Image 1 (tube, rainbow, N blue to C red):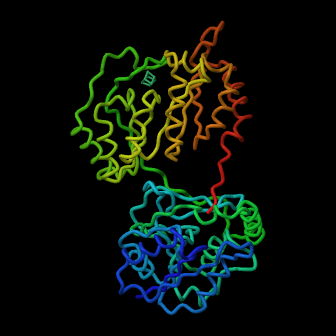
Image 2 (image 1 turned 180 degrees about the vertical axis):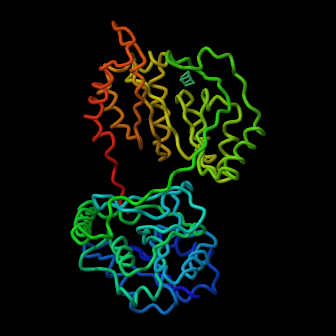
Length: 442
Ligand code: SF4
């Protein structure tokens, strides 16, 4: 089977298009390529992505059509894996691939659609082909049989966004499967092309409204797909810590041993191969003081067990090294706003130090999450903390309610302390701004 590969670009002579083409030539066996068609549509206000795809869909001569955005870099084996997947079942009409960002982090293994008709990228690692609501057209294989059955992209409704989502939904409607091939991958520098467009937000809004209007009420749009349960292990390389939080349940423990790295690696192997875990949370104690932490992170990444550290953020200098060695995610504890945090963590300057950790993540374009335990030290200033967290934009903010078991100042410990309820209400009033995600288009 041979593919017609279309590379869509706004600047055929530019760096993106050259890198994309170079990767196609380097990582694709020539016998799988029928033709490579580069479409330079420029960055004009009249650009209509669906219409550009349709021009090629009408004339391609290969057995299958493959669309690439110019901000993708396909990896070895990509096309064979996608073709194999397409051939594995006559009902498969569209095949996508695993996409990573520039640092190798998986950002897309297909997508689903939320109740407001926005696309949601799924990013759990996958070990077998997965059926999806839709896959991103940045790397999309379309079978000729599907084109013959449902026709072309809807260029009258969509200009830049949702044309791929719509096409996949139409494929489902015609009885075809849309699948992400687990063993085909590409780096996608998301939005590198569309970022140049000043009207991208407006375009996204218009196309999203068009998508909603077209599919609202359709039986193909149940609220949410079942998103795979993450298989996640938790490991404790040491109970040592570099601070003594006032509320820590380990602070009276004398156990400061560091587990041997070989023992840790054996445990990680077990997580991966026996339990089939995809992720591991490395906690403690404080994982950044574990003497083999960098080696452990690198080993986890090497065996496909994506590592998160759950950290007090008091060693910001180690963050770049961990990210470079394959850290997948960071969950940082910030137990209050400024002095409240210092009081809870029993260390002057603890707040400023963890903020440096978050800044270090941001500088490296590395997303992070935060944990705040609700405490008698921090409850008065939670609104300020909420505003602060909104500004620094963690990916997820967790508030952990332990107030019920603590005595508030001037009160006796009371398991049914109603103060906890009002604290939660107060935080929920901030929830919308904290949780509202930054839209990323492209
Ligand atoms: S950072 Fe964690 S382990 Fe260290 S003292 Fe605080 S709660 Fe305990």
